[in-house]
Length: 421
Ligand SMILES: Nc1nc2c(ncn2[C@@H]2O[C@H](COP(=O)(O)OP(=O)(O)O)[C@@H](O)[C@H]2O)c(=O)[nH]1
Ligand SMILES: [Mg+2]
Image (cartoon, rainbow, N blue to C red):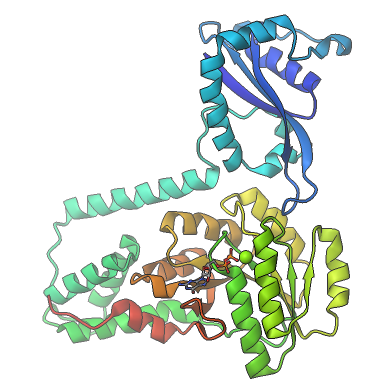
């Protein structure tokens, strides 16, 4: 059986697509109203999701598409052929619908909400990955293959300190091609000898890594920034970080903060920021739609710095990211921090970082350094996506568990004490 899912504006749209694609014998397994697109849960549009199927023996291309007169086009799903097919297929449908729900969560909402003809193209049922995920997997596979072929063509026998350095950085989860690049640069350092001690090797590594990262060193919040957006996946620590930074700015720079949150998905999310707002004596505005933003800014016009908290959702989704970005890029006195947790999976972090970096976001704030001993993902993310690390958060205590990112300190932490074996 061949199953396809269509997301359309109306049933007639679906029927003509189904007829032309699957032929006249196609049956409709399920229809339901869904909401797609929008911004942060607002302005979502109504669409119909229609799941149609055809026995696979009948090649659909052989079915000439029949033009459908408008009055014939709409056949409500309750008509007999549809439901008899549905009854026969009940078991199959349960699985199909379950899988499609999963797929729906992962699908780009803009593609579904866009009124362009391309958006009306049905989604192929067997498409478990987003393009970003696929790209990331291909990248990782390429790295693995390069790693294997290197090992096979040059059986690796390194001087002991180089091997220890290699082991240390791989344990820190630095991407293997970066580690190899580092070892090659050390080996081509002026005066390098295979007799170098571990200490000399570590020192060389330190200065190369600092050299790699130095261009990304940046200062924290600058006085020219008045609106600071925090974006990133759910639970990475955006709200907590905002509270820490608002306190830091008030205490150290006497800048009076205001909060805006558009994270109205979870009731607890607003309460959480409100609690911090009360403790820190900072006004809070809640916005339910982008249109309310100007009202919120007006309410907070006497504030030196406005922290804007967003709901973290579906940031693996490139199209959604572009939507968010178009809203937040409008002002020159605004800046955006992508927040990533060091406890996250590097594959997921990479997808999120790539999606944001592509839309011009160039600063990253890492959290939860206290919950891991591996810091390699910072190096990977910064170099791969050219993001400047602004702060690093290291615990749940507000306001103390945050510090500006310091390249030197980071490299020391990454390398650890030099080791001989
Ligand atoms: N260990 C640790 N926990 C943190 C850190 N930052 C935030 N958290 C915790 O992570 C959880 C989610 O934080 P929250 O600010 O609500 O994340 P959000 O969904 O991105 O706004 C909370 O329990 C925070 O206390 C950090 O640097 N280290
Ligand atoms: Mg939050």
